[in-house]
Image 1 (tube, rainbow, N blue to C red):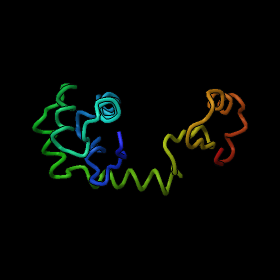
Image 2 (cartoon, rainbow, N blue to C red; image 1 turned 180 degrees about the horizontal axis):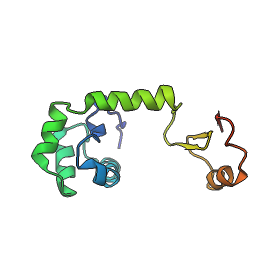
Image 3 (cartoon, one colour; image 1 turned 180 degrees about the vertical axis):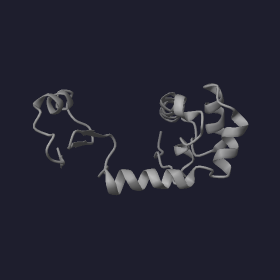
Image 4 (cartoon, rainbow, N blue to C red; image 1 turned 135 degrees about the vertical axis):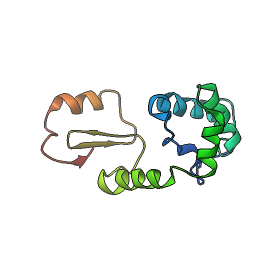
Length: 126
C-alpha cells in the first residue's frame, strides 16, 4: 500500500459516540477492513461517517461528533488512564489479574497465563 496507519487527528478513535456502546467492535473492525483491505483513507471524516452509516449509525450525528470533537476530552482521559494508570504501552495489551501481556504472543501464552494462576498477586509485564 505504501502508507502508514497514523491517526494524528484522532478521528479514527471517535468511540465516545452514544451508539458506539453497542456497535464499537463492529465499527473498529469495519475501519480496519476499510483501511487494510480497501485502501480507504480513514483520516477523512467523510470515509468514517460512511462506514458508521453502513453499520446503522446516524451519519449526520456521527459526522457532527467528529467535526466538533465532541468526545475529545473523554478520549484523552481514556488514553491517560490506559497509559499512566493501566500501563498499556503496546497494542494489543491484555491484563489478566495482575499480569500484563503486551504485544503479540504465541497462541498458548494467554491460556497459559490464565491457568498458571501465579499472576494474581503481582503486576508484571510478560
